[in-house]
Length: 419
Image (cartoon, rainbow, N blue to C red):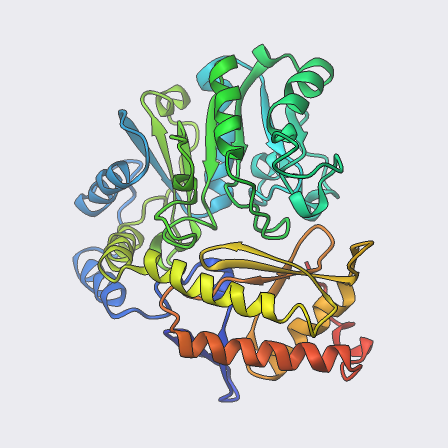
């Protein structure tokens, strides 16, 4: 990659690609949005850097004030700033036991919260299984309806995984609920396979948290800032989290993360999770401009419009393409799960890698996720147009036909580590 503008990327050889990845859902406003670039230039003219752990600056304070207003929950909030989703979720790992005096944290199988030891311990993704992690995290199944671990069907299941299983099994065999400091959940599990939980799932988890008096943390690192059709994905429910974790698209790619916390939760740390460059004024200026662009250009509404269009088109592809087992999504985070057999749902892992490879050869950037590495993830910039979406869909279908026709050998994807 040499340069990028809008929804297009150009490599060092001059080849142009349409981007359906947005650098892992970071470039929500597209690459090089003029308002964001100008905000960065203006801030650099004022100060190249000041460390907010010692001296505050107006731009960082303004961003904190803005985040307090736009995040859900009509209660007093405070904001911590870092550099990435990993360090923000590391804060969560530290802060929940400290703020509550309880030792354990509840998280979910399939969850991806980061690469540092605290955030990796909170995760339930195969990317972390080679590392032991910390022992105070209890992991329970997420609402993955296409592959329900309990072989139940929504809505007849009564969202069993969100209430009965946790109360009847997890709280009796893995941890006393009075030892739980909080739960951390992704409103849409992206790296697990773009898993969208059924309506009411998050609300049931919040009822559980309120019943036993522990904190509710929404990890919006990847799905926040307009991607699902609301500013934050949790707003599709009635839940007001005590803690929200923000990062990737927050500053349109400039390094920045934030935790927006209720009341005095942050005070419990007393300065034990400080990053010298956290809340960098240039990144904060980019974030203020990013929020302005999302709101003024109504990118959340565009995410709903384009997401509905693309999902419909992908569903149309299921009839001629047997590899497609499921199509799901919320706004402009869509998952296409590939299977070798629709009855057995055997994951088509190698075929998914080949599809990403062939799409790249044909001029479309995509990536795959999932615990079986068989879900094509679609997260384009939120500025995408219908014409651009249709162009990418046609490339994708052509590439899928070429994979199904045996035109992509195993050797083509053998050098790549995958995910």
